Image 1: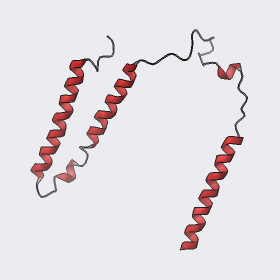
Image 2: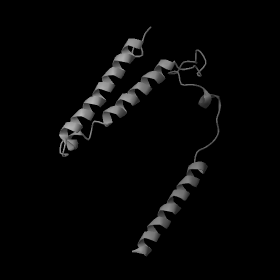
Image 3: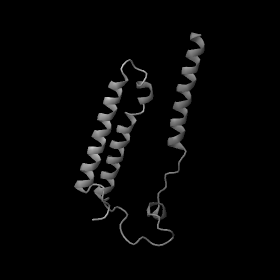
Image 4: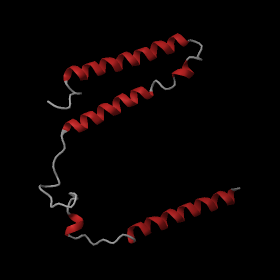
Length: 117
């Protein structure tokens, strides 16, 4: 059993080291003007490719992650109903939903969900 485990560990380590070395040697590192230019559907680029992003994109992404992670807290609810006190489970789930709703209302009032100004 130990011999089989050690063999698997050695094989996986050697395979990962070989693949890491091959990934550094395999690509051809010869950047030229065509490879470094931004892709513009066959047209010459009209401006710089390094334009700053609007902070609105980051705000929407953070809001999505926040509300998505908060919803993940509600996933164990069906198993929480089997606890000795399902009323406590209902109370905490309602608290999470109320906090989510209040956060959504606050963001709506502050204009965080408006895309165009």
